[in-house]
Image (cartoon, rainbow, N blue to C red; front, side, top):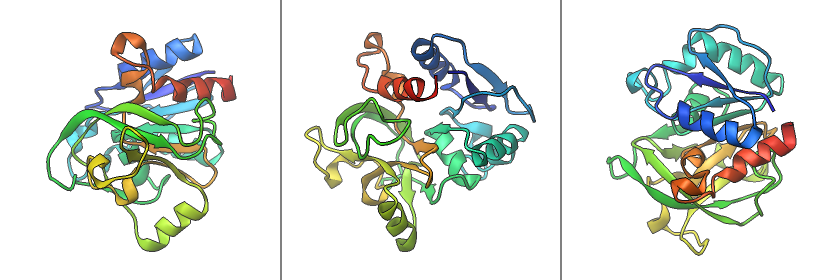
Length: 229
């Protein structure tokens, strides 16, 4: 599997994703600077976490207009898989590849800690190495992770099985206490209709190696390699 990581001014998890992809795929991903309007053909594109363009205007709003993102959108519409993590999820909503928006956390505070998320479906190229209903421990680090969508949009997400992950307690049960940001219906990540684009707020790359204290996030990268290699 050949992957590309898009790097924006303010990205701070690009190297973490680079390492996770290298370990899973056995080859170095292509690091693409935001000004590059074109880049080599790849099997996967990843938008990493961080604070692209300093989060000015809105999180991800400026990055969504970058030359590299115009190419990402074009390729995504042709079926190239795209993974957006944290700020990358925000960018995906800003550029229209995913529905809804990410708002300020309900408590208006930055949250940085491990949370538990539940895999809502294993029937995707991003989650095939997990079991449906499996609970994962994954870190979050964000100030704007409160996922919001209108009632019609939520109904469509549910009907199309587009909800990828939900925040849950350690035992897998939904609860308000398990929700770190107030996200609607405890949503932690969503797919596009075709399940070729995934955005999620938790950081799987930060817990993808036992040396980091756990490997629950490794399944996303292993799933992608198994499907795309």
